[in-house]
Image (cartoon, rainbow, N blue to C red; front, side, top):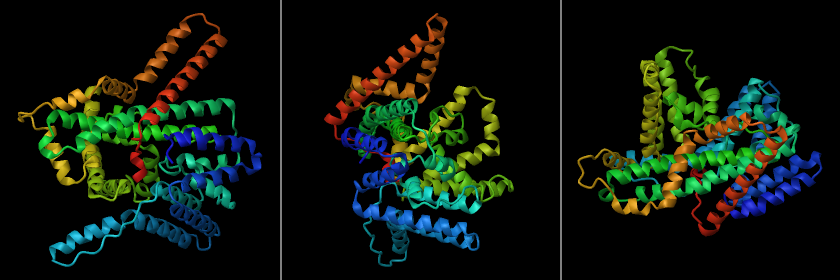
Length: 479
């Protein structure tokens, strides 16, 4: 079940919300925990058993760490088992395929590649579980002795299958004590609908263009279609994932939770380093606190720091998918970070802001080719098409005509939204409004009416799209 589906919006969510607020407060965690398990079981009962095993495992490992006498042993045991489960389901096939490539060189018989379906959200809930164990080990948080509470932390359905990656010490108090207010609930509804609009209206439309271009054979790929395709994909992945994060944050508020932000206009970044402070913030912070800093971070000599960065970005790439494309994508970002640390960032800061942003945006988009391409050969030909200025086929007329007024409209909205135009416009309107001598109650009333109209229009548009179109993928489900 995905958030951007009619069954979730008009079926599951209203039932769970009604049940949650009709349930006495002392039983609400239990109700929400059971609801989260039902939500996850929608994708397959077998994979629900894996999630349940993870919950039981990390609950008892946490209790073992809290005893302190063998806390290092329990931590190593817990992290090892979590990573082993993740590796089996996510990387077994990749490792065997890589081994087969090596065996082929020495003319050995290849190993059989197992067909293992990837459980939805396993990377996200595994990282959350590991962060809990490490925080208990470091005594950054107290161990949770109630199974329902630790189960709710790991399996909470708003962020269960595609993040943000919530860390226990950020939400521990909210699991026990949280307040649900009308204002917070309404904020949650608005945030959810905003994310739904990002996903259904923009990401899905960008996906149609990107999928069409990336499915073209190498001989049919022109410079115009290549650029249109990768720009569309850059918007698709941003609005897909940030839209999901907005929906998760909004859902959290509906149930009284405050989930931390996961995106902050990454495409306005002026360096790759800044990009990673704005993109998938929860993952960046996770790797910083649980991998980069324990490795020594930048507190060691510069060469060791560079190695630490490459290790982090190697694993970042691998976390996103079991493919060498993702690994190279991650390493490319790592190398760019090292180049900036070597002094290029100081040079960048002396340049006009638009040049800084163009640099960061260009290399981010170039890296997305590796992320989206089927393999290295596909990526190579795609890069070749992007810069094949000598080709006699500069324009793909058929593709241009397929980009109707609706496509152009969403392209414009995508550009404006990604570069922070709408918050800027909102501030300007508020500034102008404050100059007029309206009463505070009138301003609040008008704002409320506008918000209700906005939410209603976006929800109606999204519903219409979902009724008429079954194309509704989530990129980050595979991670």
